[in-house]
Image (cartoon, rainbow, N blue to C red; front, side, top):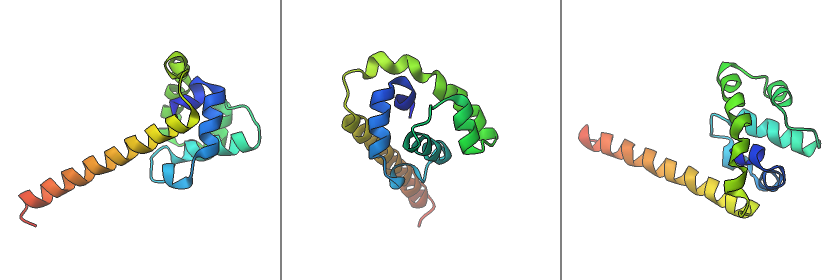
Length: 113
């Protein structure tokens, strides 16, 4: 998600390609929905606009400043395309799901299920 804040052009490209299934099962889904809304309305993505659009609860309120500070990532992302960023995001999400399923399987095996 930090790429949206780190590089406006690259982040905008990633947002245009995002699908609900990319983020809806994440704790940060309200932030993704707010980002997409702000982008579609051609509004500036700022701390205040995100806080307003997310109706930020305590968890999201604590997360927003960290996301906004990720602008220092720009130099490391300058050679990537939006497609590469989205592919990497999806790959990381799949790997996390695989890890979670592997852990659940190990627990079930230990419990004799």
